[in-house]
Image 1 (tube, rainbow, N blue to C red):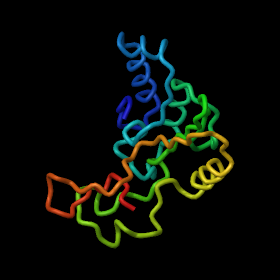
Image 2 (cartoon, rainbow, N blue to C red):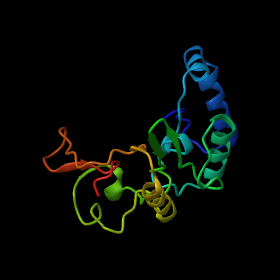
Image 3 (tube, rainbow, N blue to C red):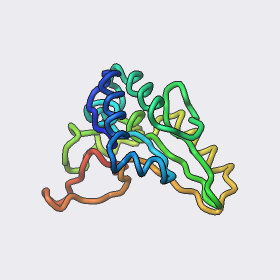
Image 4 (cartoon, helix red, strand yellow):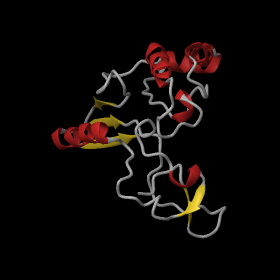
Length: 171
């Protein structure tokens, strides 16, 4: 999460980015350090992990106004993109906006049919097709996937054995 505005109100989104970049610490970094950015669910709504939140277009507009990006693969409704740096190609994924809603109420749960449903998606059909085509055609020595959601089968150590966070990607 970057600005954490937790809303889709355009004025609030804009003021959140303005405050973020006007601070002494971050304003110095953004002027001198190369970086790339992809939003997380609190950057465009209140923990809206599956992207079904109305008003998301306002968040997308504010993001594009304040965050420099490489050429977007789906500029009308997406932030995923790629770029090449030396012998590496970076695929920056939007794993929040198009994913299947987190199963089991987005908490910590034992794995069940809802969590392991093979129809679940992290990227959505369009972004997945873009990624597959990009990886197949890449001539880079290294292909790097950058994204917001841990995708690994890591058990929670603070909950009953066999429990997993449903905000991650276990499938």
